[in-house]
Image 1 (cartoon, rainbow, N blue to C red):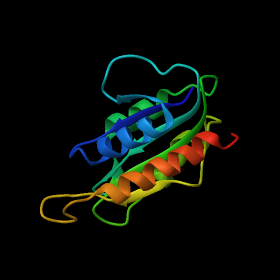
Image 2 (image 1 turned 90 degrees about the horizontal axis):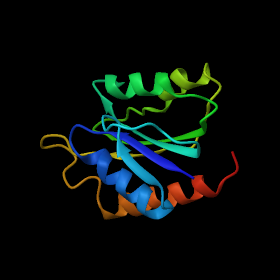
Image 3 (image 1 turned 180 degrees about the vertical axis):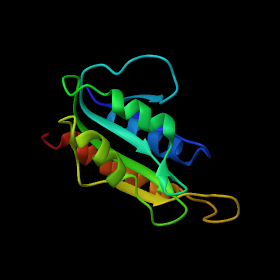
Image 4 (image 1 turned 135 degrees about the vertical axis):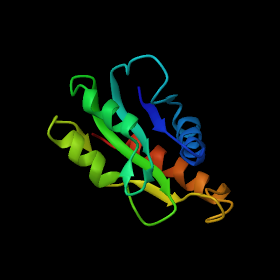
Length: 139
């Protein structure tokens, strides 16, 4: 079973999380929703960048992940700039023995008056296709 966990401040990452969950049939929840992660093949992590870093709530969550429960992580997210959450997520999880795919999905996200209409329908379709490929890939 695959799962989606995400953190969002503007709603952009939630849009991608929905596209990922719908395409893969994965369970989806926000990082601050109660409940634990069940044993999973791929955990899709929606980790957007704010001021050059991922949200502290998501960082704290990632630090609690158990490699006996989570086998592999695939990262997706948005940002107004070119910052990717992948290096920070990889840094947190690599020491725990949790594999992080080098293939991420990243697109622009609306912030204030910048990057309006993003993520758009094309971004959501690409996120879904990426997620399906990740779900079908061997760990």
